[in-house]
Structure formats: structure tokens, C-alpha cells
Length: 263
Ligand SMILES: Nc1ncnc2c1ncn2[C@@H]1O[C@H](COP(=O)(O)OP(=O)(O)OP(=O)(O)O)[C@@H](O)[C@H]1O
Ligand SMILES: [Mg+2]
Image 1: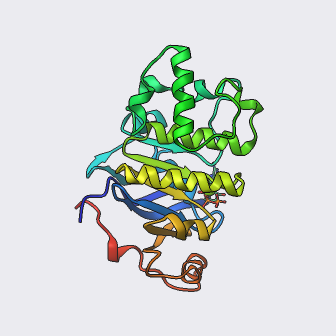
Image 2: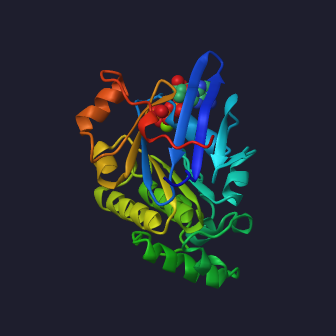
Image 3: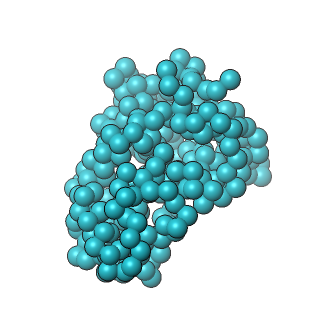
């Protein structure tokens, strides 16, 4: 089995009296879609923040390509090829779509669409942003010169996902990317997730939408009470099984069966 591109062992994070992460393990392989599921408050977003430099865990270890790493900021993680769309969106509303696509570009290594995103002058940026959105199948906005604050919630989400897809060279993390989207846009995002995966990038998808998870995930990380309680393949379990493990009605495998953490 190949080494996990991103992995973690025994992450702990307390918020005052709340234990958001209680010894959580994690691993995702290159070129796979890993869904992370769990009830509200299970610690999914906290896990993602710890893995992407948005917060520092109280203890535990994180590995990138098998090497122990400490990310001091999201920028730190981005420089190493990890792009994240957080649950609360981080687009700049006052800028237009093309400017948002290029936000922070000087600190990033391009992902699979990045080679088309290197030109720096504004007209070229607009052309390339439009081409990128087109390639990603995101065509609902009228023009890339449209200010992001004038877009619908779903369109903003699409811009954020497109940006992550364009720049994530190793790992793309999407926290509830389809929650605000209509059926058509959600379908486009799922298609985009598959395309990112097919370029050898790892995709981490946090979602409450079980049919979508079963449609697109190669493996499912089930999170409960701050821990990974199971790591399963959608081909080997039913949605009912996953929900039962999520809620504690059924015992999970703790991920041991598939675990591939560095020694
Ligand atoms: N900044 C914070 N300050 C205090 N408590 C927090 C903070 N962020 C998260 N928590 C708490 O940590 C726990 C885990 O929260 P987290 O946001 O990681 O859950 P989640 O699995 O992402 O839930 P959801 O499915 O609702 O997004 C919750 O009890 C939450 O209230
Ligand atoms: Mg969350």
C-alpha cells in the first residue's frame, strides 16, 4: 500500500471544556476521494482545520508524504499543496471572480489547472479565469468581471471550489461544498471532485449528504465524538451501516483495518 499523502495520529483539540478532537487518526491517499462524515459537532471541521494549518492541535502528529509537519497557518499548508474551502466561505466579496481565482497566487504552487493560471496581467487573468470556470463546468455566472458580492451563495461556493481545484497540487479539502448548491451545481461540483481525483490529487470531502458521499467517495472516514470510529469503503457497507456507526448504534472498525500511518 502506498504512503498516505496526508495523515494524522492521535490529534487532540480542546475548546475550554469541549473536547473537539479526542485522539483522532486520519489518512488520505493520493488520487482518492475520502469522505468525512459525522453528526453535527462530531469534530469534522476541527479535524480539517488542524490538518490545514487553520488551528494548532493541543497534541498529536501530522504527516505530509510520510514526513512529520507542523503547519503554522493555512498559507503554510497552501504552500505545500493543500487547498481548503472552509465551511464558512473565504472569498473576497468586493473583488471580481477572476481576482478571487488568483487571490494569493504568488504563494501557491499550481495544481492541475495551474499551468493556465500563471499569466499575471488583468486581461489575461480574466481570460484564464473564464477558461478555468468553463473547464470546470461552472457557467452560471455571467462574466468573470462580476463582483463576487453580487453572486448567489451557490455561485460564490462554486468560485471557491474552482479556486481550490485550480491550485491544490496535493490535497483539496472541501467542507460541505454542495450544502448551498442547487441540484445542477451540486452535480457539477461532484464531477469536478472526480476530475481532481483523476489528476492524482487527494480530495477530502466533508458532507452530510449520504447519497452524494456514496456516489463519489472511494473511502469514508466516520467521525464521532472527536474520533475516527471507522474507515470503510462504500462498496462494502450500506448507508444504514454508516449512519448506525455515526450515531453510535453500531461499532466501527476504528480505521485499523485500513490504517496506513507512518511508523
Ligand atoms: N471556535 C470554537 N470555540 C469553541 N468551541 C468550538 C469552536 N469550534 C468548534 N467548537 C466545538 O467543537 C465541537 C466540534 O465542532 P466542529 O465544528 O468541529 O463540528 P463538525 O463535525 O464540523 O459539525 P457540523 O457538522 O455541524 O459542521 C463542537 O462541540 C463545537 O461546538
Ligand atoms: Mg463542520
